Length: 249
Ligand SMILES: C[S@@+](CC[C@H](N)C(=O)[O-])C[C@H]1O[C@@H](n2cnc3c(N)ncnc32)[C@H](O)[C@@H]1O
Image (cartoon, rainbow, N blue to C red):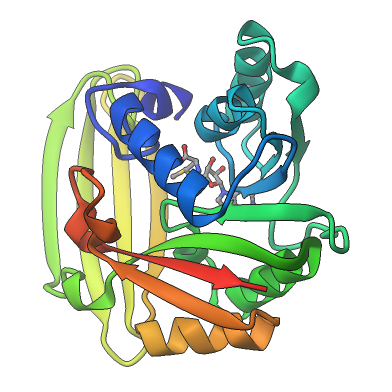
């Protein structure tokens, strides 16, 4: 998984370096980031954003439950000589004890709110809001519900070394759209051809209308929400698939 975060061949787990730089400029502007500010990066993964922000003088606390990604984040901070600016916390962000009024800004990017149930998403928004100082802002990136592929489909392929395995494997995938819940579910079955082992991974994408997400943010305690469709036209390979929310406490 870590390898897939770091590759520049695709942006499936983390975006490519050039795109991250564009996003960080945008975050800096929209969040009003200044040197010495303390930012919470919720689901920080391998720290690609946290370390770049730290290099710009922002203190960052990154939370995630992936040990390999977090180990990489710590090493990256060390190599870039920003260890004193980056705090990494290994935790499940759905149950983390969010500290009160600690942060000047927060990020919850690359659609990670969507992999949680609605109740969990609300709990996380509540926690983030509680942990922000008054007047501070949160950026949330979510797939635009109107652009989601709602066609049921299935596919298969074989490969040797990519996200799903390090030796020859066959991948069987299927996607199903649950219209009532507005939920897309993907199931991946990987057959490892050398051992016969079968792995199953299920990925849920809970989608939200902009009205529903705005209401959830207001319920969490934010006072206003600004929505930027099409990733505010920042040049990303998939900009038009995303809404970016900026919620102000
Ligand atoms: C698509 S990656 C994005 C990482 C990072 N934000 C980036 O864009 O480079 C999603 C990350 O969310 C983390 N994650 C998902 N659900 C989580 C949870 N409930 N608690 C902590 N981390 C979680 C995963 O471990 C993974 O590192």
